[in-house]
Image 1 (cartoon, rainbow, N blue to C red):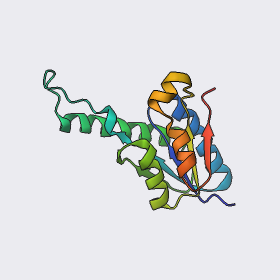
Image 2: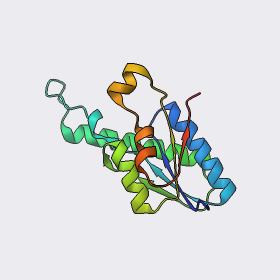
Image 3: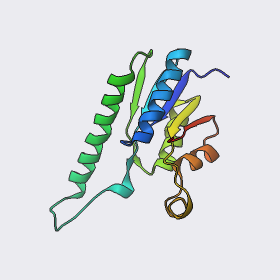
Image 4: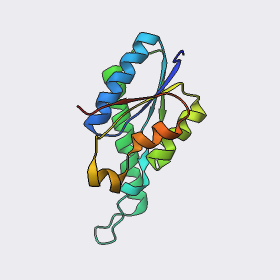
Amino acid sequence: MQFKRILIAVDNSAFSLRAAKAGFSLAHQLGSEVGLVFVIDKSREIVSGDLGITFEQSATALLRQAEETIDQLIRMYDGVSSIFRFTPEGFPKTEIISIAKEWEADLIVMGTHGRSGLSHILLGSVAESVVKHAGIPVMVVPNK
């Protein structure tokens, strides 16, 4: 199988930095295009009347964070033929798969937080869900 389009799912964690490094390394070796997807996670939006934070302000701050993270990764690991940027709003489990299908990715690369036990039960695993539902190969980069 040839991986012409590699979608790298990132956030602002150290786990996704490791995944980005692995994804860009693979793309360099194969001459692949890279897509970077940073999902603006709706469950993390902060709206507080007490603090004077509106929905729009929270959404703008999260988008800025996503764009800055993608810019930083491009500066760190550039050198591939072309890079595409995706910053959809929604839930990472579904948006990563949706972007992969729309962009016609051949491979998804993502990190894992390595949660286990109760935190895994309560928070679930984005990586696990993507592996189960993507329909294309998924490379999961462990946190250790």
